[in-house]
Image 1 (tube, helix red, strand yellow):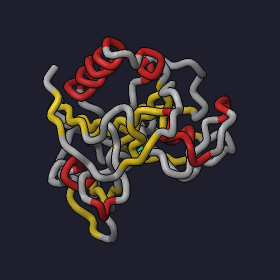
Image 2 (cartoon, protein in one colour):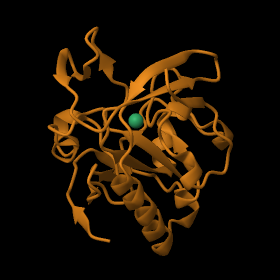
Image 3 (cartoon, protein in one colour):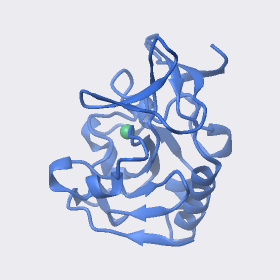
Image 4 (cartoon, rainbow, N blue to C red):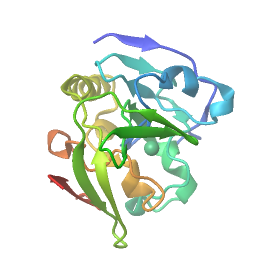
Length: 210
Ligand SMILES: [Zn+2]
């Protein structure tokens, strides 16, 4: 697979920690926004190792040996390390996707960037409900993931295995699970059944008709 390389300044050292997991994110942006460009700007203060576009192209922003700033305040309970260190032992993959959409009274969908609502122009949204372990629920309409992006993710994980990151590639977790309440990516529409995990899903997802 072809991976386009970029250099985001938003990284630091893993300080010797072994890479043992992969955190899945969505960008929370519509197709008119360029997440690669943004995550390579110092003012973003965040990054990911890879970004996958809706149409399938894959970008690498930070070297795998470095810590990309993708998880923020997070905790992966079975690790027994300080919460802020999740990014230190994981690979961060962002998938271009609006996530939870806003529906107007007339039935049109929007995605929000800061305070501005922009018309949603992607595939037909699907209803989904996310329940955090503490019981809080996030429900509504979400942007579905494209087959092209999911195929690229599978190919990327196979590639990571080939180059020595097999443990991380076979141990996926959602950002919503390691930052419950605070984050809702990758959300209920992410097809977990296609990917390998070590722990059962800690947030529950239901999808279908509202
Ligand atoms: Zn995230």
